[in-house]
Image (cartoon, rainbow, N blue to C red; front, side, top):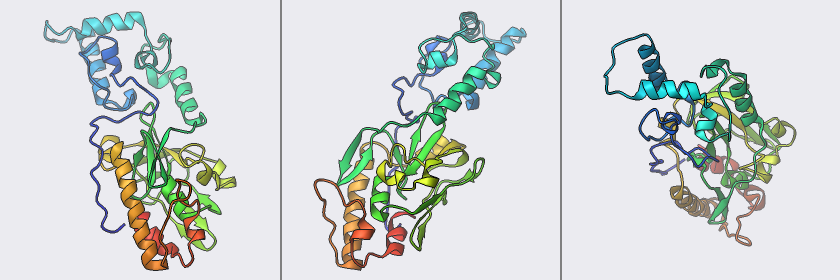
Length: 305
C-alpha cells in the first residue's frame, strides 16, 4: 500500500452484525443502569460481566458493600427469574437458565456458539462505490479484507469485492489451521492464480476457530459470493475494540472504496496504458485477466499490503 491513509471506525462500540439490540444483558435485566455492550456479547470474556458476578458473590458472603447499592438485590431477583443471557440479549425469544449462569459449562450455550459458526451466510445488503460492491455493516481493512463482528464477539473474515475483481478467479485458496494465531496487518491466508500468489492480511488479531472448507474444493466461491458463502475463516479476537478502530466502517468504507477505484485507474494507466471503466454499473469481474500487460505484483503491492 502506498500513500494510503484512513480514519478508522469512530463507532465507540463494536457493531454486531444481525442484532438490533446493543444493550448490556445486565441492563436488560435491570441490574445496572442502561449501558451499551462493550464486548460484542462475549460475556465470558467481559471484564464488566465478571465484576457484576463478583459483586453478587461478595454480597452473598456478607462482604461489606454500600447500603444504597441496589445491584445485589436486583441480581438476586434475576437469579430467581433464571432468564438466560441469550434471552436477555435478544438472541433467542425465550430460554431459562438451568446452570446458575455458569455459561462455561452450559451445553445450550455451546450449541448456540457452534451453530453460529456453521450457519450458512445469507447475502448482505450491498451498496456500490465506483462499480465495486460494499457490504453494509462490515468492517474493512486497507488491504481489502473484511471483518464481520458476530454475536459472542467472534469475527468472520474474507476478501472484499474489490480485491476479488482485481485479481480475478483464483485456482487455489490456502487457509490457516484451526487454532493458529493471526495478527492484524499480517498475512492470514494464501491465494493463487497460475504461477502468481498473494497473501491477504488479517483485519484482526486472534485465533482461528473455523475455516471455510468449500474454498479448498471451489476457490471460485469467493469471487461468486465475497461477502456470503465465500468467507475465509472465523476468528476469536484478542484485541477486538482496538483492532476495529483501525478499520473502515459505514460511510467511510464507501468513500475509501471510491478513492481506491481512482487509484486503481491511475495504476492501470501507468503500468498498462489502460483506463478502468465500469460496465453496466459494475467494475470488470476479472481486471487482471482482462487488462493487457497488467502487472500482478504491482497490483498486489499497491492494494493488498
